[in-house]
Length: 126
Image (tube, rainbow, N blue to C red; front, side, top):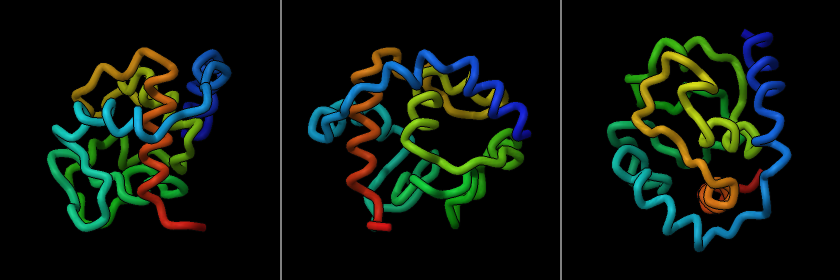
Protein backbone atom coordinates (compact mmCIF):
# COMPACT_ATOMS: atom_id res chain seq x y z
CA UNK A 1 0.00 0.00 0.00
CA UNK A 2 2.88 2.39 0.72
CA UNK A 3 4.10 1.86 -2.85
CA UNK A 4 0.63 2.76 -4.13
CA UNK A 5 0.57 5.99 -2.15
CA UNK A 6 4.12 6.81 -3.27
CA UNK A 7 3.13 6.19 -6.88
CA UNK A 8 0.05 8.37 -6.53
CA UNK A 9 2.14 11.15 -5.01
CA UNK A 10 4.74 10.84 -7.76
CA UNK A 11 2.07 11.01 -10.45
CA UNK A 12 0.44 13.93 -8.64
CA UNK A 13 3.51 16.15 -8.28
CA UNK A 14 1.84 18.90 -10.36
CA UNK A 15 -1.06 18.98 -7.89
CA UNK A 16 1.40 19.31 -5.02
CA UNK A 17 3.53 21.93 -6.76
CA UNK A 18 0.62 24.18 -7.65
CA UNK A 19 -0.96 24.44 -4.19
CA UNK A 20 -1.34 28.17 -3.54
CA UNK A 21 -2.02 29.81 -0.18
CA UNK A 22 -5.63 29.23 0.81
CA UNK A 23 -8.27 31.56 2.18
CA UNK A 24 -10.63 30.06 4.77
CA UNK A 25 -13.52 32.42 4.00
CA UNK A 26 -13.45 31.57 0.29
CA UNK A 27 -13.10 27.93 1.33
CA UNK A 28 -16.23 28.17 3.48
CA UNK A 29 -18.16 29.21 0.39
CA UNK A 30 -16.61 26.50 -1.81
CA UNK A 31 -17.26 23.86 0.86
CA UNK A 32 -21.03 24.33 0.43
CA UNK A 33 -21.22 21.55 -2.17
CA UNK A 34 -19.28 19.21 0.14
CA UNK A 35 -21.95 19.62 2.85
CA UNK A 36 -24.14 17.22 0.91
CA UNK A 37 -22.09 14.48 2.56
CA UNK A 38 -19.63 16.03 5.05
CA UNK A 39 -19.71 18.36 8.04
CA UNK A 40 -16.55 19.78 9.59
CA UNK A 41 -18.12 21.09 12.82
CA UNK A 42 -17.26 19.05 15.91
CA UNK A 43 -20.78 18.92 17.35
CA UNK A 44 -22.53 17.90 14.13
CA UNK A 45 -21.01 14.48 13.46
CA UNK A 46 -21.31 12.25 10.41
CA UNK A 47 -23.61 12.56 7.42
CA UNK A 48 -23.54 10.38 4.27
CA UNK A 49 -19.77 10.76 4.52
CA UNK A 50 -17.56 10.92 7.59
CA UNK A 51 -17.19 14.02 9.69
CA UNK A 52 -14.22 16.15 8.69
CA UNK A 53 -13.74 17.52 12.20
CA UNK A 54 -10.05 17.42 13.07
CA UNK A 55 -9.28 15.40 9.93
CA UNK A 56 -5.65 16.42 9.54
CA UNK A 57 -3.01 14.17 11.09
CA UNK A 58 -5.51 11.32 11.35
CA UNK A 59 -5.22 7.98 9.65
CA UNK A 60 -7.48 7.72 6.61
CA UNK A 61 -10.70 5.79 7.18
CA UNK A 62 -10.60 6.14 10.95
CA UNK A 63 -13.16 8.73 12.04
CA UNK A 64 -14.81 7.14 15.12
CA UNK A 65 -18.44 6.18 14.64
CA UNK A 66 -18.42 6.20 10.83
CA UNK A 67 -19.01 2.64 9.67
CA UNK A 68 -19.40 3.08 5.92
CA UNK A 69 -15.87 3.50 4.64
CA UNK A 70 -15.12 1.78 1.34
CA UNK A 71 -12.72 -1.15 1.39
CA UNK A 72 -10.24 1.09 -0.43
CA UNK A 73 -10.24 3.60 2.44
CA UNK A 74 -10.26 0.88 5.12
CA UNK A 75 -7.16 -0.69 3.58
CA UNK A 76 -5.31 2.56 2.87
CA UNK A 77 -2.47 3.34 5.22
CA UNK A 78 -1.68 7.02 5.32
CA UNK A 79 -2.39 10.09 7.41
CA UNK A 80 -4.31 13.07 6.08
CA UNK A 81 -2.13 16.10 5.52
CA UNK A 82 -3.06 19.28 3.67
CA UNK A 83 -0.81 18.13 0.81
CA UNK A 84 -2.50 14.74 0.50
CA UNK A 85 -5.91 16.36 0.85
CA UNK A 86 -4.97 18.59 -2.08
CA UNK A 87 -4.20 15.58 -4.27
CA UNK A 88 -7.35 13.79 -3.06
CA UNK A 89 -9.57 16.76 -3.79
CA UNK A 90 -8.08 17.16 -7.27
CA UNK A 91 -9.34 13.71 -8.30
CA UNK A 92 -10.56 11.35 -5.55
CA UNK A 93 -11.13 8.38 -7.86
CA UNK A 94 -7.65 8.58 -9.35
CA UNK A 95 -6.04 9.12 -5.96
CA UNK A 96 -7.61 6.03 -4.42
CA UNK A 97 -9.59 3.87 -6.87
CA UNK A 98 -12.55 2.09 -5.33
CA UNK A 99 -13.47 4.77 -2.82
CA UNK A 100 -17.12 5.79 -2.62
CA UNK A 101 -16.75 9.57 -2.74
CA UNK A 102 -19.39 10.88 -5.11
CA UNK A 103 -17.45 13.99 -6.15
CA UNK A 104 -15.34 14.26 -9.28
CA UNK A 105 -13.08 16.54 -7.32
CA UNK A 106 -12.17 20.20 -7.38
CA UNK A 107 -10.26 21.05 -10.54
CA UNK A 108 -9.09 24.54 -9.55
CA UNK A 109 -5.95 24.59 -7.36
CA UNK A 110 -6.98 27.82 -5.62
CA UNK A 111 -10.40 26.41 -4.77
CA UNK A 112 -8.76 23.29 -3.29
CA UNK A 113 -6.35 25.40 -1.24
CA UNK A 114 -9.26 27.49 0.03
CA UNK A 115 -11.28 24.43 1.07
CA UNK A 116 -8.23 22.96 2.82
CA UNK A 117 -7.63 26.24 4.67
CA UNK A 118 -11.28 26.19 5.74
CA UNK A 119 -10.97 22.62 7.00
CA UNK A 120 -7.90 23.61 9.01
CA UNK A 121 -10.13 25.91 11.04
CA UNK A 122 -11.91 22.77 12.30
CA UNK A 123 -8.83 21.17 13.80
CA UNK A 124 -7.64 21.01 17.36
CA UNK A 125 -4.33 22.66 17.97
CA UNK A 126 -1.48 20.10 18.04
